[in-house]
Image 1: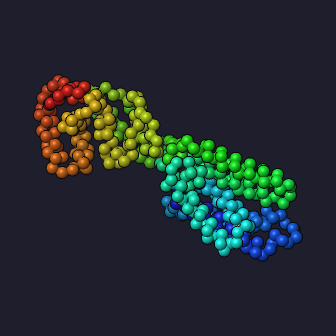
Image 2 (image 1 turned 30 degrees about the vertical axis):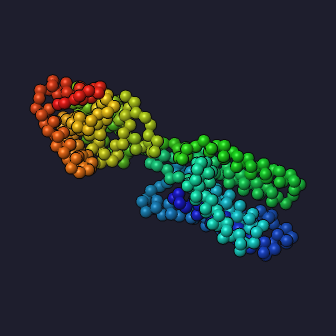
Image 3 (image 1 turned 120 degrees about the vertical axis):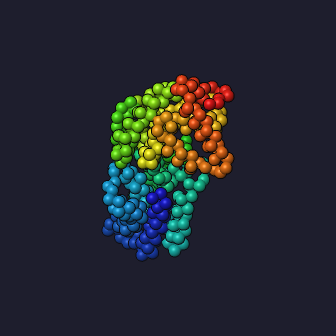
Length: 377
């Protein structure tokens, strides 16, 4: 969708320029005024604007129809802003066509408009991309803030309204120029001042996802489309945390574990009572409980050697019944002979450790997770 904005604006500007030049060559403006010049311009621009809107709306409409999905009000923010911007670019193109011959202006305006908008994503600072109308794709659960859609409308709309004021058939010319310039400059400066401090990503509102939850201590929440995985995952998660607490490996008692996938590209931080983790993919693959197990093991040494860290993870996986998930993770990380040798050492260490009494295992895990020191099973 984001690749269509620049194309739609270029279509609106170029074809409006052509239509304006056509009216000019037909000497419409020299005829006796039977209708308002704005109405004549609107009649010429309606087909152009409808065509530019179809560039924006037809591809997503086909996609939604194929997936039998209804758009939500939030999902319409960017398309509606794009439609308003198409109208603003059409006004700009019409104004150019009134001044420059259409044969020359139309192709130049089409290319210039497209380049000006599309290439803002490749320039620094970031504010040009935010005021251009070249919107970024929204992530899962994200909705653009109203200010994100208002900034490009303010810039392009201010210029378009200024041109329309300048074209008024009555009033002092100097006054019209002053008012038009004030409106246009105000829109440009307002858009710039608003977006100047933004980062590469425009302001987004996150968490707009229908969630389902299951169980308690901890309560597990994920997007509703994964609700079928929740009951079993919650029971196994609660059991795994209980086993690790009994073994002295953790003191974690989260009351809520929420899928951070619903936060989009800006996950909110976790707290001791509320953990935010990417559960959607791992619940489907059966690795969610192992992810929680790893999360609950807190190393207090900043530089833990790989052998000790892997031994802790494997020991915890075996104790909680998550050894298959541990093996799948290691297989994905297999980088050659060195990795396989390390894994053999880890398995040998953990096998000897599991043969020891429970008290010795608890003492070892306390040392392994404790401050930096030499740790051996």
